[in-house]
Length: 599
Image 1: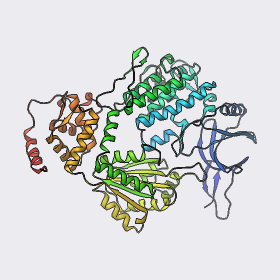
Image 2: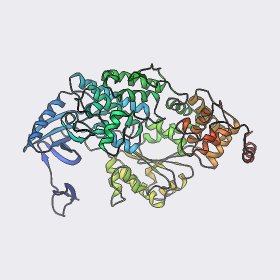
Image 3: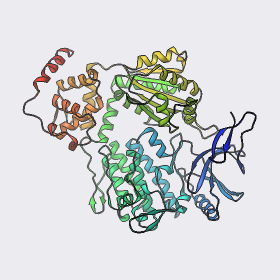
């Protein structure tokens, strides 16, 4: 169906039959669709008909002041030549409007990516910050300050290359915001703005360090460092408050963020090159490749000690557990299946928590063989599949007519764009799927076939049979591949638990046989999360200063319905081991578990 543009709403609508679609051409560029709109410019995806490539066409709004700004921005960006800075191809004035043809980055911005897939893994986040620091170092060397480092200005190609955008507009844009004393003309985005810029002082290279620190906070948590209902409170937070970091953020990463976001610019890294060194040290600390010395923030020692049980140790434990034969074999089969790039893959096993580290090691670790465009989880309270996918991809409330095509179209690489890797959308299925939802998955697979788009569904062994049966019965089973991980035997589960705990705690904690039996009982019979039980058991043991993980610590782990963030979150009744244990009501369960244990 051809389409024409509505001049009142600037939206596309169906054109009557027999009419031609309106073609918008600016110089050598044919506009294909709008990418975004801002206070200074509109950005379109356009095709260069001479060089036959896609570009981001930035068209500045009309006005005499914009004419000057357009030329200034073009000259500013033209001085930058770095692989992690968006490149300027061409600038011209046509019919009284300045437009710029810039490098088109096909993966979207970091803010949207985190909204779709969740916070980044710590090492990935810090390596991304390192790349941005390198781009800033290049810009600062030639006297260019960005002034607006934020997640929206970090663009990512589908091959995983991060690029810093909007240098020119950052230096020329002003926003009138109100503070407690007087109107201030701000340059930049309030959530990531350095204190000195809130005070109306000129931006410097260290202002960019602050913005990058706040952006790293966002990468690790999915939220800006400060959230407020109004500009007045946001200003006060940036000027006076210290950002609070969740317990699962590694200490080394937290130290970098706090140094970058120091209120006094003198307490921040001295340069972008210096920040790169700190990020490299932090990555080495988290991966266990090096130890890091202590630095100071505002004259005080920064928290540099790595806790006994930390994000670093948990990553090490995941890697060690994946070497166990049953997990290693599942990982190998998943790699082989995904290498075939079928449109539909179902990965099922004992529980989603068991599958997650295998999946992450194949998809997210090492070379970027897949571009994970979005992740969606379907639990008991989730809306139907179609509505959930449209919501996660920010395509509307749906489902609506032709929503399958809209989803696949959103995930597809742009035709004629840069070389891409297969695009994947992960669907974490935590409930049984309806026949209608199974049909929807098949429809998505039909439309994704041959388009380098994959849908990867993870579920447990209770959900998988119904899902696979429905999809096979559709007649399109040839679109589907599935990988199964067998149920762990009691011995394999015990080996997994002991191996994981050994590496996560540095061999500081040991399990009793009864505790492992009770853990298995909660996981298999009660369908509790093994990951949560392991994590909480360790924190209960550490919080009570015990070296042994017993049935008491497992019971305490189960009582806490959510993940314990720190020993301070442990309920008072579980902070000290009782003099008498086990309780009488627990004895029959323990005796039954002992009698059913393999000999």
